Length: 273
Ligand SMILES: [Zn+2]
Image 1: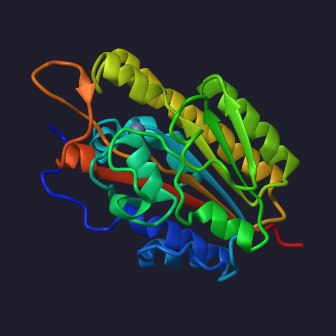
Image 2 (image 1 turned 180 degrees about the vertical axis):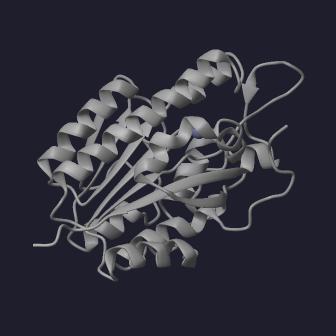
């Protein structure tokens, strides 16, 4: 198999701190740290100016091993987001647990979701930090998904759509409107189909392609409509997957296939006047 046996050392809980530092706003209260290499990469590409637009594309369940096995499917991702950040997600690697940590910068013990449940997270999050700093975040997510629920009850906009294609269509529209500083975009097809089949099934491979095509559309829209901003685009999955004994795909174990993820980031610099 084409995947690693050891665990990544950079932590997903350091992402929120990195994004806040790059936007030059104070991080949420329980944020654990900063990914120095990613921060440096962003600053090099904005000539040290803070980011004023961030789009986080969150494709569910793409582990690092899936990227390594299907690298040719990621050309459209790397076209706009060439910087790879290898990360260790949090345990248990379940969707609401991981997104809870991705956007609070805190461990599951601190944000409170430690199993597959979707309560509203009460602790400080990147969305609260953005609002406090006078910025406008929004979430675009599939109905009933974790991302459609766990960061609710903030004074911000939520666009809840039927499925992945509607989420992308909505996001393309709001990128064009250029009114949000931070957009989190959630898609779930790969997770859905790999649970019904396995992570290397034909339908799962198609779902990887769909995520990549969506990422390319989002990148192209940012390139066209956010020229007056220093923008970051991220391809940021929550956890990986595995298959046991030829059964269905699953995730939730403390193993590299479930815990190691690869994020991809790219900067589009403000156009020179
Ligand atoms: Zn997930």
